[in-house]
Length: 362
Image (cartoon, rainbow, N blue to C red):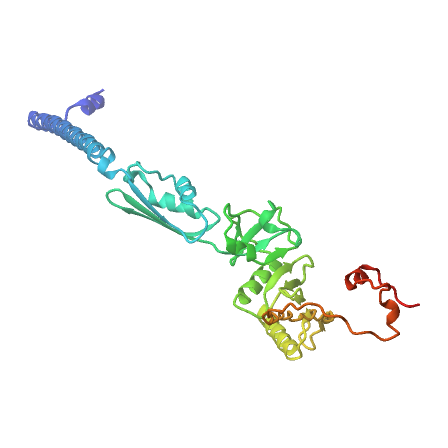
């Protein structure tokens, strides 16, 4: 029992208890002060946030109203003039419709990047430049793809009047134009190629098609040989028909070397005054060549000789009439016996004898 009481006895004196109470009150005071400071800081932060938001909202609303009045609804910035220039067959209405650009629209509402991207997605367009000139003008400049050949399923059909025909440029991009320029009608035709899967604006990656395009590019400035039709139906070669209806067989690679061999054949044929009929350029040496037979010339028919017109006869000169002296008839001398039978008998007068019919002697 004594040991338990000794354990419950307080070890602190009144001075220590007072110090503890003072320390506890000081801790409570510090906690309340800290709490008040925290509340003050929070209130100040919220006040500043609200004030800042109010100022930003006021500025935003005021700026929006100012933009609406002085920019978006300002008639000085309405689009009045659109300059359009192109080197192909696209029309102004087609391009403006794709770019969604119309006159009377606010010039700042036109997204130049979007308009340019939309125009360049057209199959015929290679490059587009869209510019904005304040306060109310815009300019659109196009560089269109130039077709170098037609693509037709069959060589004997007219590609310009067929719905299954397309055009193609030097890079192999498929084209289809609504307006046909006069220069398109003289382009060479690439036939023997399936056109059902062709899509305007996409590139053709076929090996034979690329070889045909390379041949057309290399032969564009030549005057001795012009390809009129390129047949791809064989698959391993190109059968080219030129302007003289000759058939030339090309391989799918090294087109430039094959053209050199063809030009040498043309020079030899010109020196011999002959025309090529077939040439097989798949063979590098001793190129097989045939010549067309000369056509039989029709005999020349001489035109009928034209006789010169006869000269008109000169008018005859007539001597002027002389006055004749009228004399009285004298008695005729007696005639010979042979003519006496013809003389009228019984003393008939000369006038009566002339009135009788004259009979020859039997």
